[in-house]
Length: 361
Image (tube, rainbow, N blue to C red; front, side, top):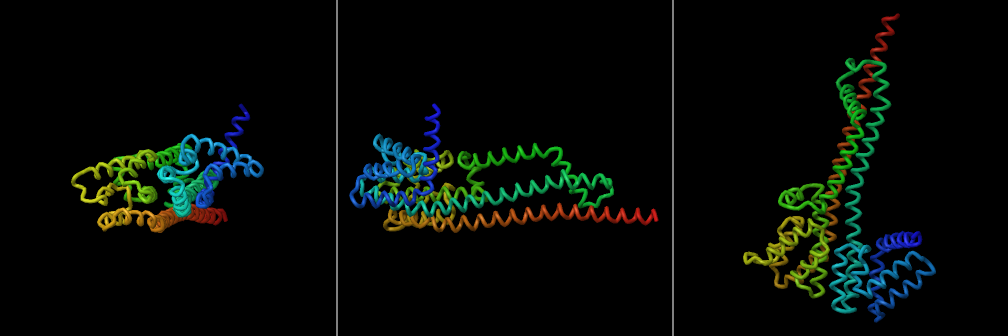
């Protein structure tokens, strides 16, 4: 039993390590396939090499070999690659080794760009959270250590207005601080849960604004890249969308179903109008509409999919910069207000002490 749990832990660590370097891994596999080396032989060689250098990775390669023999490379990569990449692997493997090599090269290039988008998204989330936690720690320090000292020296009714505001905040933190922290964590958890699960017309409206628009732009770009890579392998747009349903979360499934319904509608003049569900950024939505009006709409769609990541990355970076700037200004305003209240109160206290000294003299 203990050995079984140890192996699971080792496989989990190896899976995390392979996930981080999967762009290079895809490229290595594609070069081996270009040289007519079977996929099984390459994976077996990796497993033998890992036995000497990294036993945890050897366990993972054994698992990948078993799963690839039972199903496909996409099945073997579950838990390592995200759903969008599994779609590409699944479609490429149906057409033979040459298609798999081409799909792996495409994924290698795509992963590097999507990882850049992921880092931007994480920065847009982590930086504001860091500032909020920092401000909460500073406010807690003022409430439990600075404000009580001032209360002992001078009654609150003699404090200036800024000091009284600081005192009110201090009382709220001292009495309801734990409750506020629990509510904040619950709201944060509800927000992250809603990203992939909340659907409907109200969600479409909310997706127009930050921070939900970041998730929409990121997920929409990945959808277009996945569809473009499948269509590049000869899969029709409808079949590509149906495959996307198998790997999508509830939010994406809601949009994909609406796209499929619009494609089936006799009123849909072209597939560009079908994507106007709110799943894409306005700029990407316009480019898809323009592509559907070209002489070779499929080829135009593929080109947009390949080039959309860089453009979306720039857009996401700009949105993340706006969020960070707002949070920096907000936290600076809060910190300035606390410092103003504290300094104004200490100055009032200083004047009161001087008056008492003069009266004693």
